[in-house]
Image 1 (cartoon, rainbow, N blue to C red):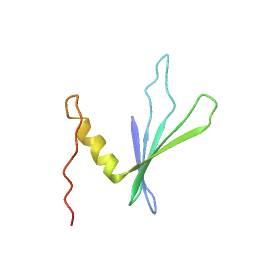
Image 2: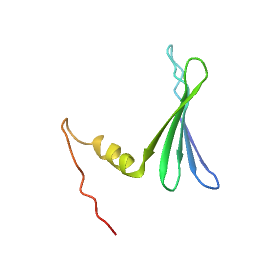
Image 3: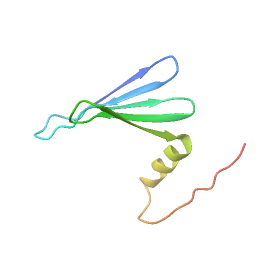
Length: 78
């Protein structure tokens, strides 16, 4: 399950783990104009955040559909 909210400066997606014996905390993704943050609380309720540049996010999206290997995506300027 997930939710989507549109805030003033970001789109916020929350991924809710389905109930199970080893359920993980919700993951919150903030999509800003220049980066994306991914946050999740750990077992001590400390929120850990990772920030991805838009270039890293494009690489991640491409990597999900590629076989094992090392890649460099062509970037168009303009």
